[in-house]
Amino acid sequence: MRILVVEDDPGLRRSLGATLQEEGFVVDTAVDGEEGLYKAREGLFDALVLDVMMPKMDGWQVLERLRVDHAVPVLMLTALDAIPERVKGLDCGADDYLTKPFDSDELVARLRALIRRAAGKTQSKIDINGFQLDMASRTLTRGDRVIELTAREYSLLEYLSIHRGEVVSRTTLYERLFDETDNSYSNLLDVHVSNLRKKLGAQIIKTRRGHGYSIE
Image (cartoon, rainbow, N blue to C red; front, side, top):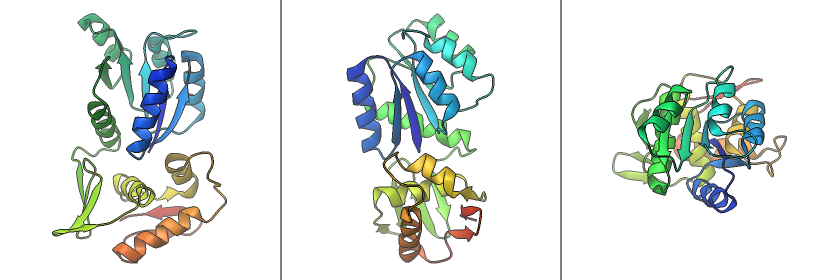
C-alpha cells in the first residue's frame, strides 16, 4: 500500500515515514500543502496523512481542492484538538482525524481501516480458499499453521485480496507496492507472484495475460 505523508515538520515527517515503512507501507512525502496537493493528484495512493497547519496551503485547502476529483482516503493529523476544528476537517472531506501527540499504533490501525473501508472491506480478516489473511496482525494462516511470507509477498497478497475479484494491472501493483528504486520493467513482480504460488498453490493468484493478476 502506498501512503502520502504531507507534513511540514521535518522530524515528524521522517518519523512517520519510518514508522509506516516498518509496517510494510510504501511512503512518499511532501513538505507543504502545495507540494502535497500536486503529488496527491499526480500519484496513485491508498491513503493520505495530511497535516493542517502548513505553509503555502493549509490542510483544509488541500483537502477541498483534492475532493473536486479525488476520493482517496484522508487522515488529518493536527495539533488542533477543539471540536470545531475536527468538525471542519470532516466537513471538508476528511475520512478520519487524529490529534497530536498520537500513538503510532493507532495511526497505523486507522490507516489500515480507512484503506479497507475504501475497498468495501469492513473486517480485518479475509478468507482465501482455506487460508485466512489477518490484516491487523499481518499474518497468513491455514488452520493452526502460520504461512511464512516476506514483507513484499504479504503486501502483494494483501492488495490482491482487498481487491478480490478485480484484475489488478502490473502498473498499479508497482505503483502501490514498490518504491522508486524498483524497476517496473524488471521481473520483480513475477518473482513474488511465483513465490506466493509455491507457498499457497498455483491456483491462488490468476494471471490475466496482458492485463494483470487477480484472486477470485
